[in-house]
Image (cartoon, rainbow, N blue to C red; front, side):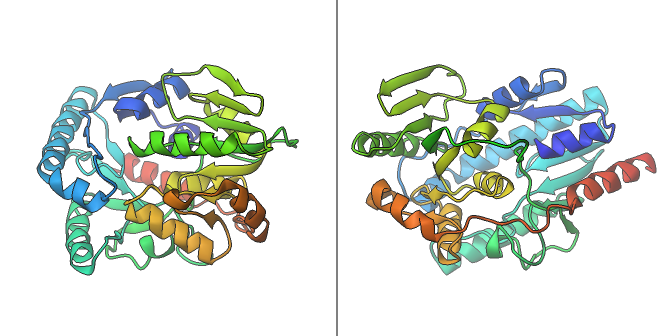
Length: 337
């Protein structure tokens, strides 16, 4: 969304392509832009072993990448786009456009060294199909992605700074104790929701639980201290985070960037088996920025007590605008080609 907003601000004409819940969200947030549906990957997560889940569906993933590449070629041919910015989708490039790949995962984590080396080789090969790479983090200083994005195995790239749709807009007051933001694949999303509900009923804290259900906007008061909502708009979620004393969420990188933008601390619960989330949870816990707890050992009461010892991310580089410069450079390049 920050990339879309910056492109629009600099006068670019653009279309948005995605699938599933992400496409639904973009349609709601940007109803005046063109939207295109891409083939879904339809990846299943039957076990908590993410490496097994991915390896067992490797052929399915390859077919999905080929399918989205074919869809992108058709979209470009019909609408004459000059450039594609792919948010970590390996098939979203075209021979007739300038192609930018956007990712923080230049160095992918894996459960064991051999798998990590194999993934590194494959990841580097796939990114090289693009003309350039944007990394949503800072190159130096306090980085959000740790060693996931530095040092880089590729040369044609820019660090465009952390990207978040959120900002500290106005003065805010605390309206509740705890905001829970659920996300990610099933069945782990449902499992975490169940555990949090069980513990919330035993605590003297007020909870708003955002369930991560894109097609559900209803708000339901299920207990005196617990309110459920399926989904919040960007503005409403921005306000909810700012007006909550404690934040509980997964440790996905987009969430990390949102928390950093709002300078909030949080309790992070990595999705079991997702090595990137487990790495980020450990990285921030060890640096006393965000508290991280294992899902199986989740104890919210204890976490709320310990959270006072964590600082949250203090952004000392608010006046730097690397994304603005990167978008400007891209649009200048397109004008000269």
